[in-house]
Every structure is written in structure tokens, then in C-alpha cells.
Length: 355
Ligand code: NAD
Image 1 (spheres, rainbow, N blue to C red):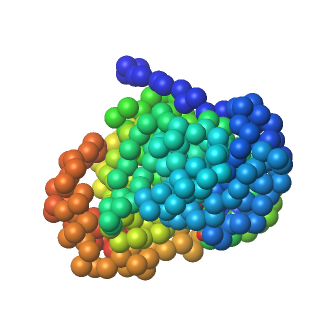
Image 2 (tube, rainbow, N blue to C red):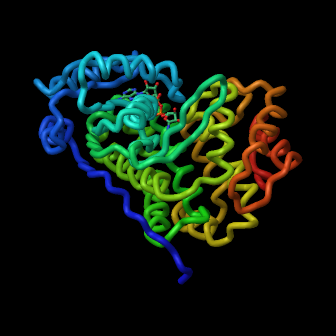
């Protein structure tokens, strides 16, 4: 056994069906009396449910959350926080909404209660990615980690099969990179394997039976495990690449993760035999890269960056941005390998061994 450090995350987690109804009790537990509820413009119905659950503790709704957490949106939300004298925020929605809650918490230290409705996994991490002037920068702080996470399986039932699948690939990416992270540990590796195993096994059934509560429960359980992996380890090339592309070209987050992951896995594979063995076990396959690509085809998710809005001439700019801030990755990176990898992902070339 190699030496390791394990640091447990301090978030309180409530998991089940109908658990949203515990929102007022959880707010009381944190001593919160004036909650500002956050959502995206398209999710006001969800915010209304949270408002009902919070009862007299809800003082307002800010429905302006946007993907990639633009700083100008945070500044507008902070005005609402001050005007309403909020003493806590409730984020109900996917990573876009959760990102806004985190950005507010970073600046105000207000406690956060999160009700995640996608599988993107931001809720269990002390990480915030913010966008300003076309650049996404990421930071970690204990202030960013939500205090309480209420996983209510029922909230994810309205996610379409397509968004569910994309979000699940995003979750799988967290666990994959945790398996070879420089600060991984045995507990996180177990969570990563179990998270990948659960999502890969459940996803095909979800596409067929998207409203099945047991299947939704499995998906959310897998997503939670993958989220823990993200929050506890340092991500490598895959996450760096997706953040760079998302910030520079405003690409959709989950789609970008879905397209890029098989290419990064294939690139890193020769340098991560242990992680690939764990991936093979978790996915029940001898060929994790091609199995992942096949799962993507089954779920009909995009397979090329060109199909999700990336301009081909943007490859050079992305490579330059990636090389500006070096970071840990199992295989060394330079302009040539990054360009080739991005060209393959841009065109949707598939794996080198696909036949
Ligand atoms: P999102 O919140 O924008 O949601 C994706 C889509 O799902 C949207 O179209 C949304 O309207 C829809 N949706 C959400 N909940 C729904 C529901 N209950 N029913 C129907 N539709 C629903 O995006 P996301 O993929 O969840 O998260 C992406 C964002 O989160 C990005 O900004 C990313 O950077 C951030 N993120 C951050 C971390 C972190 O640790 N900091 C981790 C993962 C993702």
C-alpha cells in the first residue's frame, strides 16, 4: 500500500426520495432564518417548490444563474443578498445554480444548502469556476463547500434522458481523473470505482425508463460518489481542457466533458495502468475507451467538438491557454500532443483501436 493522505469533506448529506421537504429543518439546524433561493431563469418552478419547503424562512428568489458562473451575474445576486438581508442561500438546480451559490458564499461566507437536480457534481466540492472576459478560472476554498446537500431523487426525474446522459458522463469524468490524481487515496479510489460502475450500469436502463424511481436513485447515488471524488482530488488534463474550452468558446459544460473524456483516457492510458485496470473492472470491459464511446452512441450524445460549437481555428488558442498554466497530468504535455488530441476530439475521430 502506498502512503496517502485522506481528508474527509465536512458537508452534511441527505439522500432519498422526498427529502426536499426537509429544507426548513435543515435551515433551522444551521440557524438560518432568511434564505435567498437561487435558480436559473428556466427553473423558477423548482425555486417555487423550494420556497414552499422553506416556508417563512424564504425571503426571495434570484432566478439569474447562468452556466460557467459569470462574475457580473454574481454581482447582481449580491445586490439581492444585501437588499433582502439574506443569512443563507439555497441553490436548487444543476451546476450553474450551485456555482452562483458558491460564488456568493466565497464573497460573503453565507452558508449554502444545495438541492442538486443534475449529476454534474458541484455540490460536494470546495471548487468554484468563474468566468470573466472569456476566461474561466478555478479556485478552492473551504468557504466554497456547501454546508448541507439535500439529494432528492424526485427532483432529477424531470431531467430529459439526453441531459441525464450528458450529466452522467460529466460525473464519470470526475471519477476517472480521481483514479490517477496525484492526491488520490484508497477511499476515493473505492468511491470512484463504485461511482463509475453504478453510472455505467444504470445509464442504459435510464435511457429506456427515465421516470423509474429506482433507476433515478441509482444515478443520483453514482453521481454523488463521483462528486466526492471531484471534491477530494486534483483533476488533470481532462478537466483543465474542458474548463479552458468552456471559458474560451462558451461551450456547453456537460457536452464538452462527454466529447473530450474518451480522448483524454486514450492519451493517458499508457501512463496509468492501475487506473485503467480499475476502470476495466468498474465498466466490466477490457477496453474502457471503446466501451465509453459505445455508451455515448447508445445515449445519442454528441461525439465531436465541432458539433457543440467549437470553431476549428480555436484549437491553437485553446492549446496556448492550456500551456500557460502547467498542471499535473500522468503524461507530459506539449503543444504538439495537445493539438493532436484536440484535433481528434474536434472531428470526433473515435479511438485509435476502433477498427
Ligand atoms: P446546468 O445547471 O446548466 O444544468 C444543465 C441543464 O439541465 C440545463 O438546461 C438545466 O435547465 C437543466 N436542468 C437542471 N435541472 C433540471 C431539472 N430538474 N429538470 C429539467 N431540467 C433540468 O448545468 P450542469 O451540467 O448541471 O452544470 C454545469 C455547470 O456547473 C458549469 O458551469 C460547470 O462549470 C459547473 N460545475 C462546477 C463544478 C465544481 O466543482 N465547481 C462541478 C461540476 C460542474
